Image (cartoon, rainbow, N blue to C red; front, side, top):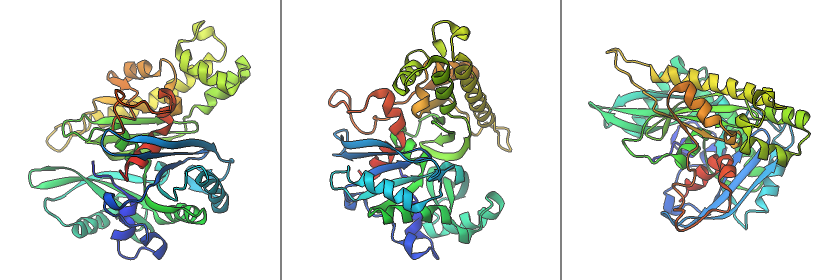
Length: 375
């Protein structure tokens, strides 16, 4: 799968600042060892992979909390504080000083468009720039953008386009640089997760990706493993944790166990303490999943043909482990709702079992996809 990378933007667009221009793409064979680093509002998750093919192995990984206010809604509010946290992470990477990192979907604009088949990269970038005014509220001079080819059809190419505010991208570059880390690429989270969970096969069904995190939930529509749409809503698992802690007086570890082992199927049903919060959050999330799913599933072109028939839902993120959630969502959209195998492009379980428990691995989907970028 050809990954859309803001590393590609940094070297490919005229007028990009010197700081960003250093982060240009290079052949994978020339990539130095690097960590996949996922920065969120509340934590930094990282993983280092080595090897090739299905023989990749996890060399190291970690999940470090960061103080509230350093990153808010994906925007870096305190570059020195984030740099300090990244510097502390760096000491645990076993000597690795390079990274592939993700940009928050909250600030990204993702869409698909068609260009004439055989167009050069420069021509396609020019066509994207022409389209920006009518599609995103960012001036071309204030944006970085790139594309992936999804498929060719009837003399044209469908491409997935990602546009991102330059100043927010530069804040991440500055934080990694101040931490003494060489940032090899930046890309939107949905691209990273897709690299981990997508096979990239031409016949792969269109997928609605749902990243159910602690503070928010990200949505992405994947076509042949490439995002053609993303959005974010303020529904997260933290609200569940707070009420369960209050109603059941459980420790953080016990809360995780309760959600994973009982969740929506808790003993006592609706009368079980804390179930109102669990059911409320699940209902709010299911409402958003259904809204996104049905919009994309029923879209039609000028000939009345369905253009993005969604066939399945993938649930990732730490809160995606909520017991009974996949069945609850599947019933709402009348389609398969699955927790995907985030290791499918890393290894075969017949030969190697990663040192991250399966439920916990859903939290590492973005970091795994980023680590795969250089292999």
